[in-house]
Length: 271
Image (tube, rainbow, N blue to C red; front, side):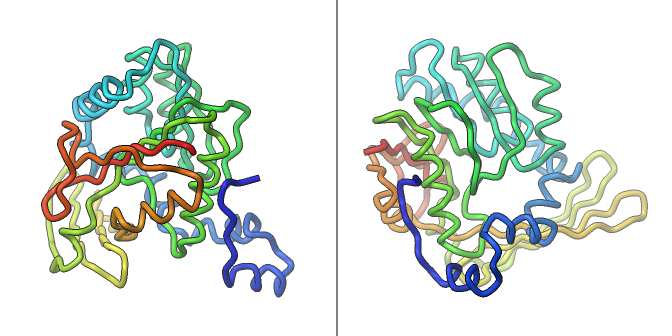
């Protein structure tokens, strides 16, 4: 059973349609922005500056802070192409990585070594036989959904897969400086592909519209991430059986400053 129980209008919808949340998600998969964007070849191209060096800095500092012993079993939740997983493995961890993108998992598997396992799974309903010492959820790999209920389901699955007193390291954008942000536009060419982006606030989310022009063809994608504050995370984590132990403001693990820190990096323990 998941650590946090959620009741909202979705339960009424299930009764009316006779379909489970899982069935609805599978039917709606193609309409969810992240399903197409994360599986496209343009996503890793646009974010190639999020490289192995950045991952190495973040994971080395977190590994040191958490004092993880050799062969610690960790889950890289939303692992993408595996850059964080690879660095965790180099630091001596046994790593399982899961992601919704089949192409990203294929790439991660192509570079995997013994002690690394990669699976295609949805963070909202993932199920694995292992129980982990640490779950890492990095690079704002949360808050993709339209309802808080689904965020809570993710945290419930994490709790269910952690050992007693296990740790969750959740790295998210710092929402506070973005709350009143004006539209930001950018244009760049990467490997001959033109990217035009426009980022704006829409309701309680930050939305990035992405136009990709490749060999005369235009492709349009959207990113939508909820503006979740530390106060919001505190309430969600508590309701799902976690206690926050530390919050950092960047990958150097400096103190979190609400008005200026680029990240909200939360260390929480399963209570």
